[in-house]
Length: 76
Image (cartoon, rainbow, N blue to C red; front, side, top):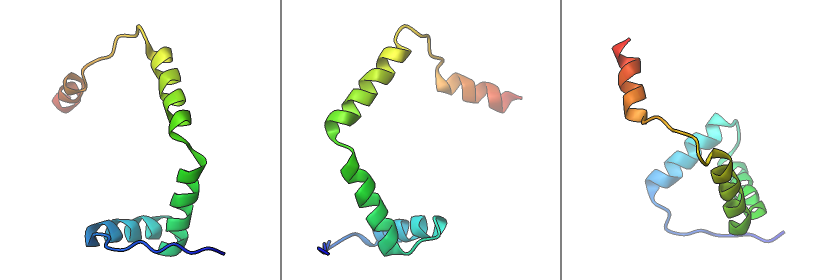
């Protein structure tokens, strides 16, 4: 099976990946395999198509400003 070596990752990136792996109950290697396999299944074209579909579904709707919603929630 082919192998991939990634050099010069920042320490904070590795730490976050290790935390993510622990949260999912996996080793770092298994977590990285899952991330890469998932990413390789989705193309940029597919992602744009999904984003465009969502935009069409939301078109014409009025959206509240999240700042106002947060302020209302905190005032309770």
